Image (cartoon, rainbow, N blue to C red; front, side, top):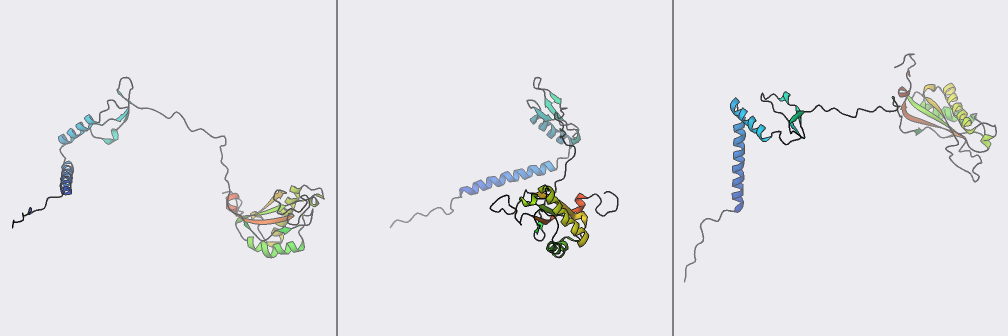
Length: 249
């Protein structure tokens, strides 16, 4: 019976081992070079390195380059521009050709934005009237005034008008809505102890009707109203002397 041949005692080396060995050799050379450059303290060797860099990064053929000083002073680097015809470096003295253009308005107005929060419910008025009813006065005194008294934020008091009945006294709807807002403001200041400084009466006129009846020009109680809103704008942002000291900020 024939004997079985024995295979090689050592298995073949995988191909990745060779690649790994080459990579480690390159890394070793790289670190040796780093160590050699870190020990480069002789001026003549350093100068040879600078000369080699200057020769490799010369300014010939380049539109923009930087000069390297032989004294190795980094503060002497100057931007250079290559002349398109003579191919000689020329120092750039370019200045911006477009200065800042002044706007039409020298001053910019501040825009006060933010949310508005409804304070209480709407106050209804009789057609063509801007007088507060006893019920409306009681509601302002008990529900609205306590929520804005002592606040430092502006409070918008918006008056509304609508319908033929509101035109009966011959007052313009915008004027009527203003008188309604002003009546609420005066009552809050005189009877409820609210600071006049925070109240802003606003005339809306017929711009924001809340409800319309079958006939668009008929008056609706929801449209003859005054609404109170607390804003997010502090009095300090709008008033030059909110504390009443007599001196501007």
